[in-house]
Image 1 (cartoon, rainbow, N blue to C red):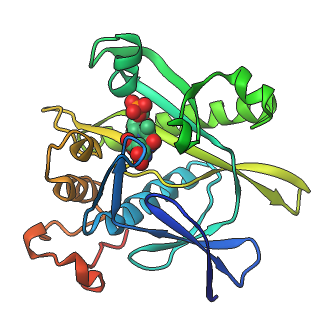
Image 2 (image 1 turned 180 degrees about the vertical axis):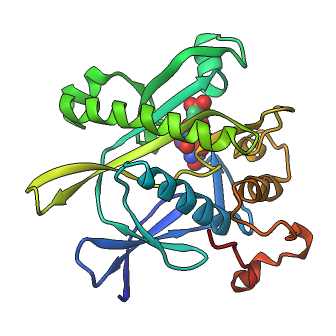
Length: 263
Ligand code: TMP
Ligand code: ASP
C-alpha cells in the first residue's frame, strides 16, 4: 500500500490517497485550533496521542458492533481508514451541561441532563458551525430521515459504551462530537453509514471523576495549560501508554522513540 497525494487538509488532520481503492490515510497533526481557528497553536505530541487514543476508542466501539472507518493504525501519526463521503453535520452528544449549551441557553454549568441530549451543527467553518435542527438536515438533504434515525441510535449506543469505558478509568464523559460518513457496501449494494473522523480529547470533554479536572481540549480553549500532560493522563488511564513514561523525558519531535503498550 503506497501513500499518494493529499486529498484534503483540515485543521487537525490530513487525508492522503492510497493505491488501495476505497482506502485512504488519515494523518494526525499537532495543530490545535479553537473558535473555528481564531485561536491556533502547535502542540508537540498531540497528534501522536490522538491517533493512539482514537484508535483505541474506535476499536473498542467496533468490538461492540459499531461500524467504523478505521482499518488499522499504521504508525505514530497515521491510520488506514475507509474512504467515506462525510455527512456535513457535527453530531454532539451531551450528558452534562457545559460549553456552548450553557452559553446559548443559560443552563447552569455542570447540570446533569436527565437523558443524553443530541444536537446537530452544520460543518461549515465560514458560518461558525451553526446549530441546526433535524428539519434543516432533511430540507437541505444533508441526510435523510432514515439515516438520521440510524445515526441517533448509533450515537446513543456510542455514548453508553464510552461512558462505561471512561467511568472505568475515573473519567466522566461530559460531551463529545461525532462525524459519520457514507460508504458503498458492495456485498449489500447499499450505501452504509459508518462512524468516521476521530474520538479523542480534542473532540470530547473529559473530567476527572473526583476533582472535575479537565483532561481535554478545554485546557487549550481556556488557556489552562498542560494539555499534553492531560492527554497523556487519558492514554495512561486507558492502559495504552506505559506507566513509567514521563512527559519531561519524551521528545515528541522524535516520535519514533515513543513506545505504546500493545493491548
Ligand atoms: P460545544 O459545547 O463547544 O458546543 O462543544 C460540544 C462538544 O463538541 C465538546 O465535546 C467539544 C466538541 N467539539 C468539537 O469536537 N469540534 C467543534 O468544532 C466544536 C465546536 C465542539
Ligand atoms: N474545532 C473547532 C476549531 O477548530 C472548535 C473547537 O474545537 O473548539 O476552531
